[in-house]
Length: 339
Ligand code: SF4
Image (cartoon, rainbow, N blue to C red; front, side, top):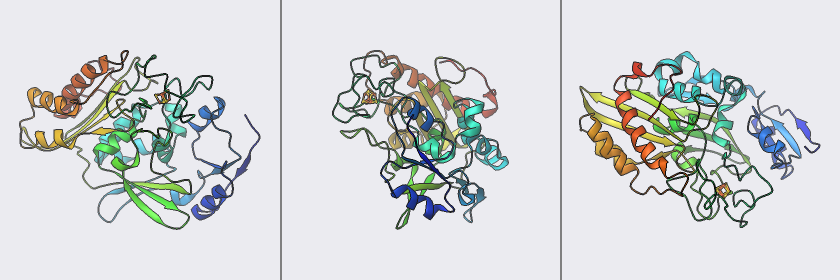
């Protein structure tokens, strides 16, 4: 680790100004991924600008449109266990609690969850090339050990996946990300926040260097009656998803009036197929129809050898999670799912 300064800004404007003082300055909130990156010698902050003490980013508030605002520095655990989230947005609560460990969820911030970096093993090994770490150096994962890697939206330059669980649910719920820069504020739909790798895999998302996430908004509709989150991984806890699925349904009887399906662990961002969701509209919520929707979602899926199994796993997970969403109480807390 290098020597560094530590700063506690008084407000968001001062935080942004402090960060902009030097290209090596970085924000820290929970630090749960930043410290990993630092220990692996992948980042060398000049100054850490601590946003965790900024009261304006640390609240969960109701919005006039009956949605809810999640402050960027609210801890993941406090979000998951907030009574309104548990009651109105249980899909989000369940997804957050499927991620990491209790200790990490107690430290990790909502904004940091969006900004976490891939867990590609090659990315964390500074002795090997990696286009995301050193642009133009190559991607050893493509022909290497790629069990965790992408089956959708990958590029010649990078086949990494985005590891968040929380963001898969935020994607299904059509969340928006509130961003403040040195000169202005803007709002970005969660589906546009993370990028596919293309030929610039070093850029994970659309946040600019002089911007900070201030909060995340959820619209009123929480799909609390029919939802399910399924995370499939190599062990029951504290492991990243091989495939995860967030399903939110609005039903009339057994007829689907609206469907949202977001997939995690398969791409450089949470993956949604509007075509598949529209296919399900006004159809019966049956295994056959969820299977057909899965085929639409996965029509462009491609494996790279070790991760070929993910295509079948994703299809089974989409079907199973669709059926679980019909009866959310069938999702036992902490139950180890299998596909
Ligand atoms: Fe690097 Fe992406 Fe290739 Fe992993 S998949 S080695 S992050 S370029």
